[in-house]
Image 1 (cartoon, rainbow, N blue to C red):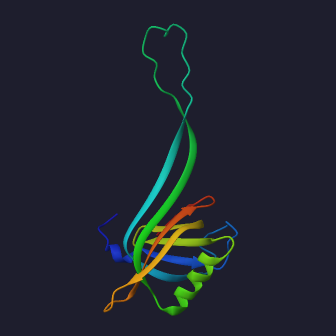
Image 2 (tube, helix red, strand yellow; image 1 turned 30 degrees about the horizontal axis):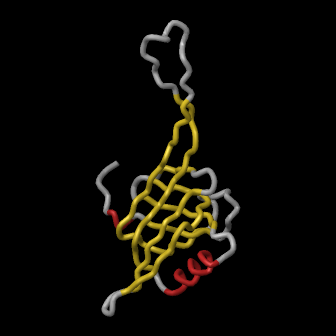
Image 3 (tube, rainbow, N blue to C red; image 1 turned 45 degrees about the vertical axis):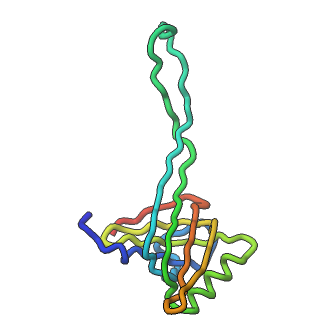
Length: 146
């Protein structure tokens, strides 16, 4: 992947929360994320068992695939009051889960249902309204390359 401008990383909100997020869903870009972090966690499950004859020797660790999760956090500026209204409605809903698309320029896009873990708004006297957000995957996350 060639060098890309970080400002091209975009967050888009889907119309559904069905967990079947993919490129065919309808998404509306709600924010450009100025500083961001996308993490994919692969938690191992320790499945180490002693091997015959290794009682006095070295036992190598064995792992099974465990919990997989994607988390996203970032700060940015909303792309207008319509997007702020839509996101605010989601955050205040009984189940703050929605299909989300995260676009990485010239690389691809991640699709999945994400839970809004936290949402914060702020602003300076002579500046735009800003936000901070933390999301965690609620279902399988898929990736579609450009």
